Image (tube, rainbow, N blue to C red; front, side):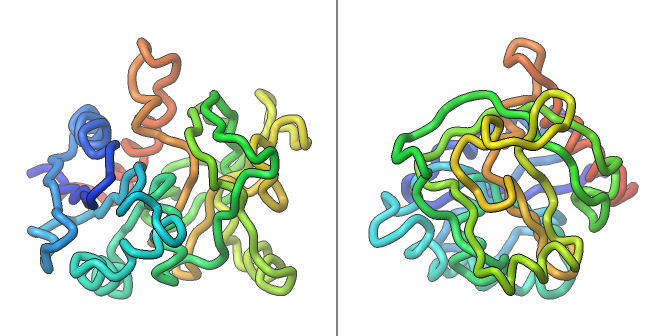
Length: 232
């Protein structure tokens, strides 16, 4: 049996089919989860994909956090189940307080759609322990509000607790403002919860899953996660 990956769909979500294709390529079984549903349909891994849930009214992810489905996602996360939020999904997880910090408007005040390099900072939890720290991945971003922010004391806790998952970097893993596309503090591109089972990331791994797209590194990330989860 293959791992069942639930993909959340809110009004305004537009990456769910890309994520389903990505899951299938990695050997998983995708199942769509409409925002008004209250169950995860037996999903082992839950993915909150990119888009503009509820039109990003009020604030990105602010309305989606109250969806009935999010109660089931929260229960799944608190029970140790793996949850991955991509772009808008990352914003929703922060709004739902399943992840620390917030995503603010890009420092350039522009929507950015471009390829980026990411350095894996930690290899822990069901979503990252299949990757070696220091590994450099290439994936695109596509957002206007992706600048990661956390207060100084919380930022110190994230660093000390190994919760900084991914950083924007150069091709060789080097850090620098020229490689940071949105002004995120400490070049942060992805974070984990304390337990390591919830991951939020702004880059889109589902758009880096075939040679035609210029990178298969997103497929590498998901396959590593499914391998760590083990046979179902």
